[in-house]
Image (tube, rainbow over all chains, first blue to last red; front, side, top):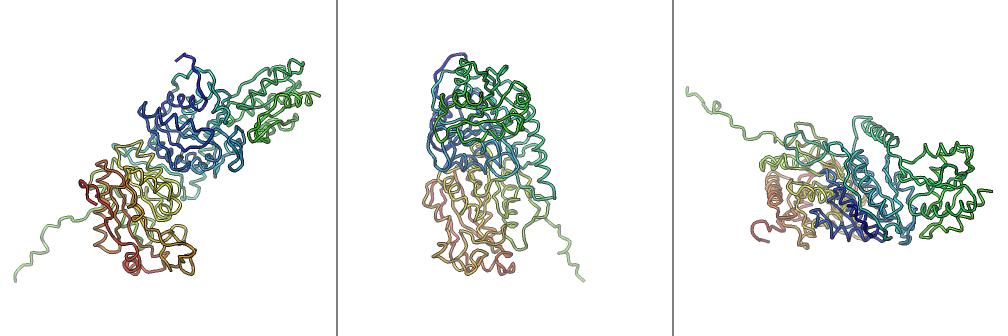
Length: 353
Length: 260
């Protein structure tokens, strides 16, 4: 599997999913992720899997619930408005503790917005999106290769913690063609699927549900169980990458495609003698709050610049981690407009003072 | 005096509690049809010896707790999405029996798209559609199947065609589709029709087991609490008011080598 390939993001993620053992895909067309259902329609029959184009994103996510009830590795994909329609289903998956992978190739919003790349669904992905007290693991790749490789982790994390995992890309990542080496299958030891429904032959019958009416406190009991799980995920699953961070006086925090533009600006600012570094959260939830807190406590750090393709969403989590110790500035473009190198560089110069 | 030996004949059990039905108290109101339908579904599961292969998919509505009453695997689904859930489940478990149990609000209002498209795809599972012309669990609101003039919490002056359209005839709608292999409407308002309903359910599940495709049984049923009627009056109301609008019929049966 060490062969170098040239693939589009939306297709590379499918190969990653197939290597991860995903054999069930349910989806509905929406730009800019249409290559995903098209590719899965072609590939699933080849690998003995099931591809089904649903009647809507609501249909898709509930078919995902259905296949996950049976313990199968299952996924869906969509883009922002379609993901909004799936939120109820994602809430159910979290409550029913069912693993699933949901890919969101974000586009500009709100409303029908446009079909250009954006990162405006950070709040929706990271803060819940659907109703109720739950969390979803959110992974935010910044390259086609990382996207393909993180699909393996996404399915593993979903099974390890019995929870939905969101793969959060944007239209640019989905549409972009880059060189990559496909991932190897995972060797992680995963917990047995002793909860699934497949007929109660030789065992007691099981139910999978989220409704907890009685006794009093039954739902809170579930909520507390989920909280303990989320605490464990927060402790064990933070992922981030750093660039030129050790002596940095200004820390840029940026994820996904925006972080690759920010990286160029770090190089350019370093040429001007400004000590800038980049922190790229790979998991948006759990968020690398401990590491940001540590950076905020460094004497040589002057401040942070949060860079996003939205009007400032992750910045709230950066500020919570910094907790007032340093200033947190923002630079972003939204609705399909990409961050401009010269604008970000100008911001870095200003913050440097 | 001649001894009367009639009372000493051995007593043969003609009725036992179905194995697939739990011996527990149900939450349904007195006179509600769900209890009857649950029992005959359990009898069908027993008679077909499929308890250990069956997964029951619950709706949201009064019968949301159906999984509590069977010695079978059971799953919840979001409101209206039971047939999308059943689709995913059956595609994942093609050798199992999937019984999708839904009420009128779940299937014919919020779940219209999922219900229509699962039928149109000819998904190989069985749908039991309980039509009692009202939303029960939420306290008696107008359903898509509420009759014209029927008073509910949200049609206090009676359902008005101009405002809310005509009551939806789902079986008739399905007959326009190629997907379903079996479509029947029955009722549980009296013993004769309960027996017919059981036959319909059994046939529908048998067709699924043979892999023939989508099988659908609509059952007219009573909701005394939300209709504001006594149990017997409710059964009478099904017969007098519902059956004339919702004719009991085998709309399609392509299971026995063709047919209608």
